[in-house]
Image (cartoon, rainbow, N blue to C red):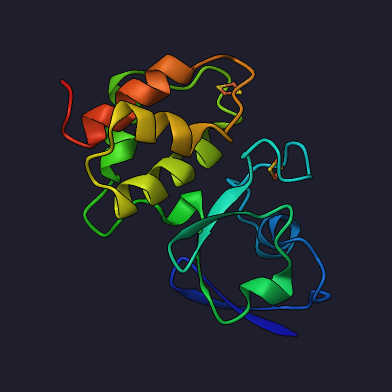
Length: 152
Ligand code: FES
Ligand code: FES
């Protein structure tokens, strides 16, 4: 059994240590907001936070997550409601099909936690590894700028 802390809740899971975290979260804990895309760390759909750092849950094992604070899209909102990024996402209607969006939001949240006022270049660089097959890149970027207080 592995003890994992997800969104401030303790979970004991019967997972092999090498099991990808994305399946632990989705299939063993039932948090299905984290999406599976490529499975090789190339698309960003599965991004969650480990101790505040954005990681790809398809190439992160359960053992690697042990002892760390895991945050998923379900835990992004705080006690006072939606994260500023979630509000901005709604303001610009960022999602199209929505599949990539949890990973986009988690990547953007890690960016703003580290760099609250990112430049255009910093946003582009930080988000470069998040693929959106619907091409919602401009709205995602606009939402990040709104959340950072840099645009209306
Ligand atoms: S599913 Fe993890 S990066 Fe694509
Ligand atoms: S909104 Fe459809 S993949 Fe990004």
